[in-house]
Amino acid sequence: MKKNAWITVLKQEDNEEEARKLHQTLSKYGLGTGGHFWRDDLPQMAWSGALEELSKADTGIWIIAGRAVDFAEPNLRYGLSMLTAGVQALRGNGFPILIAMIEGELEADSLPTLLRGAEVYPATSPTLGAKMAAKANLPIPKLALEYHLNVYGIPNLGQWFEIGPADGAWKGALFGVNGGEIVVQGVGPAGKLPEKATLEYPIQGMELELAGDKYTAWGVQNQLGPDMSHYVKVNDHATSLVFGPMPDGDAADLFVLRLK
Image 1 (tube, rainbow, N blue to C red):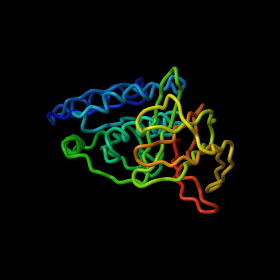
Image 2 (image 1 turned 30 degrees about the vertical axis):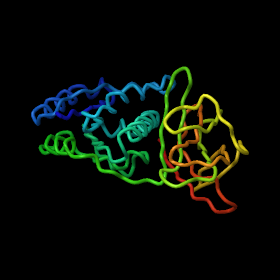
Image 3 (image 1 turned 90 degrees about the vertical axis):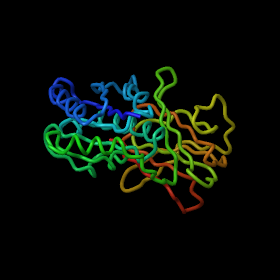
């Protein structure tokens, strides 16, 4: 199967010419190319528009092209985080993401949590084409996590997060936001928003503080396995998330993801 690269270009008006060169480079190395110019429209959840193409089996790598100043914009970082979560839910957490820097420098550790595994290279690097082709044609590495995470951006239904254990079981689940507002929660089979749900001892409005950030959390006591998930609808755009099994007393084993 011939592999394709999907290219996301940030800020079309500034980066279009460099994006054209990137497509040409990839073609020279035998990769099919497709892509889009990023649309910064969080209310319409425009970040979800590329998910269908990135989920295809012949798409072997996702390339994000932009300048350092582009990656500093909070709304853009949030949208990229949401798309990354959707891609990783469908393709695995090891799906290769490469950032092609058109201008400036960027440390992967400065990015939102889900993008910190991306590799960063100058767009003008003479070895960039070979690196991208090699990564696109390798099997996707399997990275084991203790949780599963997915996101849904549906104009008529809103923005939803899905969490649950990757293995084993959670006795209840907790989900909190720093920024944004939780408005609905539910429990149901993994992979699909539930039409109805029975919640066991639901809680709302729990206040948490972790590493100096304040979170408002909702939770349930339902037993969750890998085939069951906690679904949470969130309005607006949180700076970070905290989630995991419902804490037992003072013991908390929670995961924190920065989205901006």
